[in-house]
Image 1 (spheres, rainbow, N blue to C red):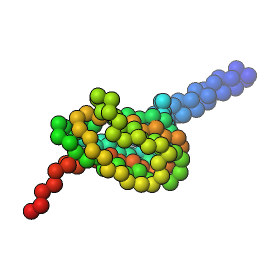
Image 2: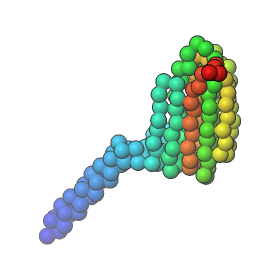
Image 3: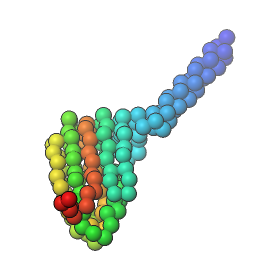
Image 4: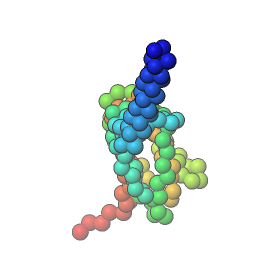
Amino acid sequence: MQNINKSFNGKKLIITLVAVIALAAIMQFTGLASFGSYVKVLFFENKGESNWGAHYYMLTGKLSKILHLGDEECYLDINVKTDAGNISLLIKGADGTTYFHKENIQTSSYSVTATGAVRATVIAEGHRGSFSIEKHNAKFTNP
C-alpha cells in the first residue's frame, strides 16, 4: 500500500511540473509573459524597419532594436506613457552620436532629428505603460 501512495505522489508531482512548464510556455508564446534578461507581462509590440513601440502591463529589463532611417535626415517622434515604474530611453547612431537620452521618463512626447542606422535601447524597471518611436521625413512640402 505504501508503494502505491509513493507512486501516486510521484505521478502527481510529475503532472504538476508538466502543467506549470506548459503554462509558462503558453504564456511566453502568446505574449502574456516573457522571461529572460527581462520580464514582459501582457506585452504587445509593434515594430518595423524604422519604427518600434509596445504597450504592456509591466516591463522590467533592457530591450534594444536597430532602426534603419535612411541617408536623409528625418524626425523621430518619441512618445512615452508612464502609469507606474521607471523607463529610460537611449537612441545612438552607428557612429556613436547620441540623438536622445532620458531617464525616468514620465508621460511625455519628444521629437529629435537623426539619420542612418540607430540603436534604440529601452531600460525599464516595473514600468507600466507604453513607448513608441516613429520615423517621419524631415522635409515637408506645402501644397
